[in-house]
Amino acid sequence: QYETVDSSSNVGWDASIAFDASGHAHIGYVGENHTLKYTTNTSGTWVMTTVDSSGDVGWFSSIALDASGYVHISYFDWITTWDGDLKYATNASGSWVTATVDSNGEVGWYSSIALDASGKAHISYYDYSSWSLKYATNASGSWINMTIEGKVGGYSSIALDMSGNAHISYDYSYRDDWDLKYATNASGSWVTTTVDSY
Image (cartoon, rainbow, N blue to C red):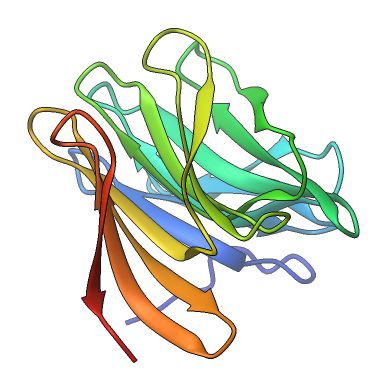
């Protein structure tokens, strides 16, 4: 069973989906004219909202819902060639608010977002400028970002355990090597492991 959610021109790139406690879908994706769009069927029909139209935005989106059902989206703002930012949007205040999380180089590829019990965001992403896996969180009240490992970080996926520790799977891809890797801060500091080697 399938249906067309948004039939606007050239939409749906880099879509990410999450479900609320009632089983309704929430989707973040690239909209027309390279905007970040969000749609949900909570009302019984699909309702679309343009969240960010500030530039070439919405790429590599990842969506999560907090315990209150508010939406949190990480995404990439492709400013120019070889320059881009990791951005974040949420409607937790009752209206959509966007923020730049990391603007140091071309950062924000392959973002993945998870929320802790307090509704704070934890994001893994790729720094294309330095070919590095990075991690950002606003758990302290302001955004903090750090590099976890160099020469890696493509296609990351993040999840949090019951204690709020981060666990990230990602790709090691440098020259002719292709490995599946895993990083976690469960011990109090970041530890990386090769899971599967080419």
